[in-house]
Amino acid sequence: MRNFYNLEIWNISYALVLKIYKITEKFPKEETNNITSQIKRAAISIPLNIAEGSTRFTKRAYLQFLNYSYGSSREVEVLLLLCRDLNYITQEEFKLLFEEIDKLSKKLYKFINVVDKSTFYK
Image 1 (tube, rainbow, N blue to C red):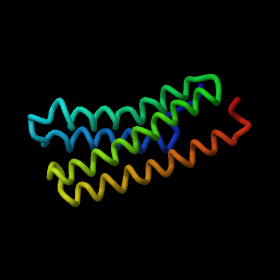
Image 2: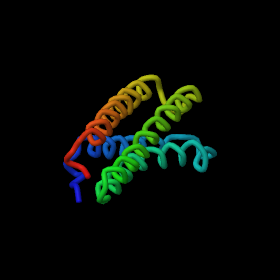
Image 3: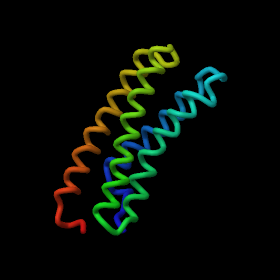
Image 4: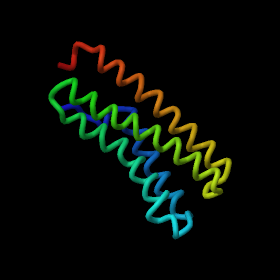
């Protein structure tokens, strides 16, 4: 089993989830079952899939969960754009969160490629 707590991508994604949860507290109540729920689910999916993938015994299975995390990171990007355009978050909040999710997406992508090319993982 791999220790996901030591992965930078897990730590960044976990911190991002906390920020997403905090920022969605001010979203309109009518969005509770829509955008608020969707962005929370997409954000929490990132560290959850990194953690779950770390328990898998094959490289193929590990990569599958890392790819789920990467897909969820892109989903969060789109939802942040939507939140900005609906004025649920300020331009400054958007800029900070978007930079974080963009950084995370790039690191996830690089990590996926490292794992894929690695002979360490079977």
